[in-house]
Picture 1 (cartoon, rainbow, N blue to C red):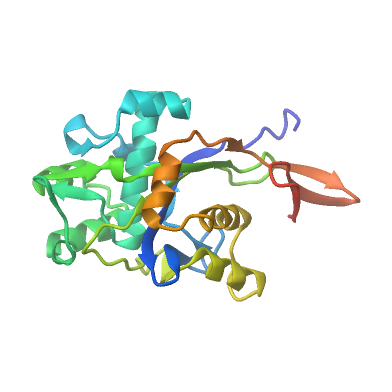
Picture 2 (cartoon, rainbow, N blue to C red; picture 1 turned 120 degrees about the horizontal axis):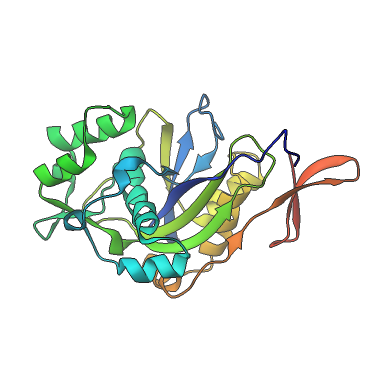
Length: 266
């Protein structure tokens, strides 16, 4: 990369594999992105997105993690570690309608999320309403985000050389009880609970678009018998950084994933 074409910086983002136990084993929530999306339109993904300035919340609005310990494990400053966790919660609410939070110590239920206030908050998050404040709304509803519901699962960084790059932490969490997931009909147009095996089969057969990072996380998830077991496994490890490279091979420009010994077409 020469000085005339400096690399595009990778934008910090968070993604969440929301899990539940089904008749055939662990199920994960997947969302189909709108075809007109500026990133992987039409692909099946997990809820997630880039960090926002509003993700730096005061300490009274979140609970459940030792922030200094998480920052050290992630190798980032505490303020960035906090924003990664908060963004994971916010994006899951925005895109999937599930909110990892409690009100005065009580878990939220479907009736809460169907209320005018909660529906309006989700809509305002989706439209990025400039004069609406996420932190003010959390306070007005006496809500505390439960960051301890999440466990850091994997870490993927888009290779240098593409026009949009993301530095993404994948998290995993058990779906909140008594809440119902539903796509936002803005960025996503369909939602489905599926086992990793079914999702991988649909991708292999060409029935669903699943990009490689999503596929690899699904393969890893498939090795766990229950949703809780998957979260507990993730909570006890520090994921490696996965950073593929764009290379020239046999006259082609491809993405090489050394971690998996795979080559992906550009």
